[in-house]
Length: 167
Image (tube, rainbow, N blue to C red):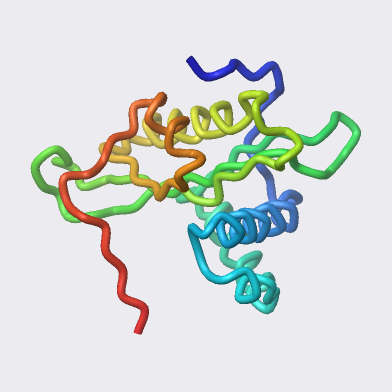
């Protein structure tokens, strides 16, 4: 059973955008080091920061996206963990009669805070938000290290293969 967090999870606000972008970059760096993503040198580029911040602001303001975070400390604006949840309208189909899905992204816990249950706490809050907003399916991409956390929360492989084309 995953450890239970004693930390307060809160819904992120606009003031957290820069920290959310910082943690997203930390996530990509960690994935590159583990071999789960692009080469380490490729992830050092920060030219995407302003576009990510602008898009995150737009999505948070629209209400289609919510981020859940744990502060590093009570008197800090630094975040220790985050998870971003987005609602996505899809075509209805079997198992999704309304066609409302959700996706999780930017799930990250600072390395020195791992093992405290923060990842489970932010993912649980994000999934609860998606379900409360009528998402019928929740998708995410998992690194091998995080996969056991997601499985413990009920995530399973989809029936179709996830493929990607980067033209």
